[in-house]
Length: 600
Image (cartoon, rainbow, N blue to C red):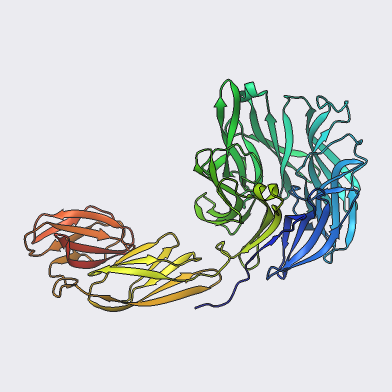
């Protein structure tokens, strides 16, 4: 029975001479607000703010074509949020003739700009930002903002790149851009092989704030095996005072910190790269990364980690790891990333946009893959996932960009934005139920051919039912009597949506006087309790090769043994878990009798 429809959609925004990269989305009951960079392919300067309706249609509310600046909204890692007035606020990198600086923009729900300011007086023209991951957090209690970003400052030298300083800055601002205070973290001299510090994340850990910073040391290629990277967790209060400073390092070159979210127990869900050393020493050594998602405790110790891609590669980019993860409830979370699967060693790869759900113990519940054409397994599109949010109907919405080198090389559209809205199971559509079957006397093999469902209910037409998850494709059921049975399969989706299919099957070939009447096979006791073993009595059977076989509800064999002779009681040394089982007595491959065992 289908109860109601759900609004799920996918949209791409693609033009021949322009492009769009979606950066952030803000969820409301009535629509989804977004920020985006658009413009000519060689400019990338337009700031877009708009909304996407529940059916996927887009409405541009603000197109800020500031020709004096390069507004790098993409890659900013800034979550758009509302301030104390209810207006939207975001930050990003701004490049102009006055230098490259942070830019904060406030605008109302209709797209009118309320405040728009930069920090051009921070330093001179020869200061430099290079794609900094700026983050901003609203503090509505005192109408202020906390802005965290990475600064490369070359003002103290001749721009040779061998002097100056680099580090991270935390700034507290009034809503109009007035600086209340600023704190520098780990500013160090710039040198060719000196350690570097970089912003990775800025997380509200009420009542405090968590700064996530990478420190890495690189050497010349011939000494690359001496490289190292580690992650600093610095917890600060509202005044920017350091409370806790912990260092996390899983392996020699531990880089990451893209997705991060505080758990109710104070722990942290966190993505980073583990790595192995590649190349042929002593020259050309390099570290090869593999993305993982991990859970840390409230002291930043590793509780568990799960590899989200088996392949060690050479891609340290943000796309290959989880950019964002979100808590679904008290036991589940989701994350999205650019998933790469190696088809042929070092030659062919399959690349997909992947949405994954895990429980809080790190067990993968499901993966949903999406691919935008063209794909050829040799140079598939690269997927940037810049935001992932939960929607009010229990689903997910994510957005970013698709970058396809082959298309760009022939002058075709190859860089475009996407928005993808799914239901709670990560599907665009509702479940569709379907199954096929084959029978061998009392045993019927059911093949589940349904799609877009998370769980299933089988109704076998004789009073028995079975619930399975989406990964059980084959169910084997043993009927005890000949006859016609109306079998139903219900495919369950989200929010009570389901689809049902019914088929009538005929069971024949069960010998009267044997199957199910206890003349040859008697179970006792029946039912039994979970954890108990089973005893059964075999009556007078003809001579031949006799066996006993016990299967569970989905047809998997849990016990198989030889029957030495009839008129004997046998004990099965198996501690049965709760459920329904079928015990079959066979001779020369022919089923003599089958009994149903219930374990409570």
